[in-house]
Image (cartoon, rainbow, N blue to C red):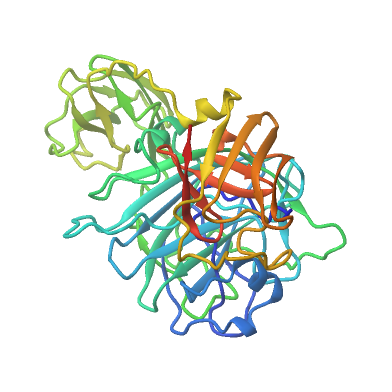
Length: 467
């Protein structure tokens, strides 16, 4: 069998190469700041790439790459937000990984078997781009926690562009957005809504482990500047085209936050709003509930904060369905109608009847047999005959074949044609969970979508599920 290289989480294209040819250690990016990342001026020469990076991450379809890192904290939950331009011919493939892509020293994610060398938290920009699409970007959010069991605190970002004009905006946020809000961003992560809306997913603890016997490469992270200093932090060891901070603008009240307990409410439902970060609270600081397009003078329900710099309060969702937001104002009346913070938008809509529908996750978890049909792989790779261990495109699995699968946690039992033995057979492997849209076929990892599409780690869409 072919050993499992990496189980991707929503990974269609796990590709990265180099900027230029000198391969410096990845620079640190600041947290809670939207940065614009630019493609390098020249593509990578595969021969010049470090062996580990070349073996695991190189892909010829996206030859312009940049690599960065974040310093994270154990036990902390984060939101990864990226906003890619919805422009045909300028696709972007960013992902976050647990391995240092440019060094012989690597950081590893410990999976169920303790063998996974990295992980990916998202796949490529949604496409094809729709004709005359009005959106300026496709925005994605993923929530995840760095496990308290982790042995290090570096998280690596690889951004792949298919041409030198590529751009992408990235932010790693903490505290994270609410899981409920992220999960409600869309109904289908593989075909997100358009017009600039977001899609998202939530993930459990990510365990970052050191490789025994290897020495870490230390790069000093940026120092958070004093709020009174006008200059941004200096990031050492920048790539040739450093990121440029473009959003959000720096304002005096940037630490003030408003966060709701959900993203969607029924009319009349209770909304719990948490607020924080008011450095000099006054008795008549106040928060109002607004239609998202209303002027600041057109407030709905509102409350004074009573001199508290942080806390929570309850509002009642309006009777009229629509999009709303909360806005924070300081020290009425001297502060006037100048808001200093806004919450993310919430949706008020009539309750929908529960849908009784058996999902693919339900089918797989039930233990009933199902099939994986590799019928979308033609032209994607050469699978006319066995090429040998470690050389064949999908290992001992073969494009054009149908495989019968039974999942009884934690074991995946697969029956079908084996290219290595040139005969049908049955083998079982452990690891990977259907709840994370993952499949394990003879040790090779795949992901599936809600409508049953099957995606391969290297070749994208290769087939579908069949009952």
